[in-house]
Image (cartoon, rainbow, N blue to C red; front, side, top):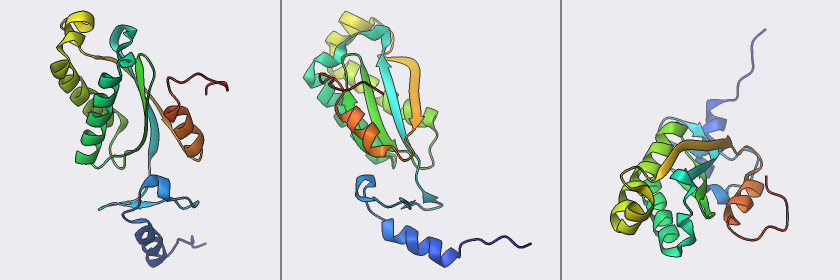
Length: 167
């Protein structure tokens, strides 16, 4: 028996309707993003913890600069970040990573942010990290799937008092 496959024209028509749209603007079941060699999405929730659990993100200027660096790196590498949230000692990110692997994305975001944060805030290195890196080697990751709004809300509300239980 011959397997039915969707027509290439139908798939391309659906994909082209989502071209150049942000992830948050795409709300249907089909949620596809067109890239040069693929059609689809891979949305993940990433978590990075500061080494030794130092509470460096209580400083708003460090938090803000880290967020700016994450967005700059993501833009340069074709990663679409939809949410970033910080608690005292860790960062959460919701992003469509496209065709990149989770270790590759973690290396890009953690490596670049550590380099610039330690350079721009020398007190961080002197007070907390003495000669080691800023981030713990551990990376939390999870596929967002259809729970995008729940995960985005969780990430957005990091560091705020909780009225509801965490994930």
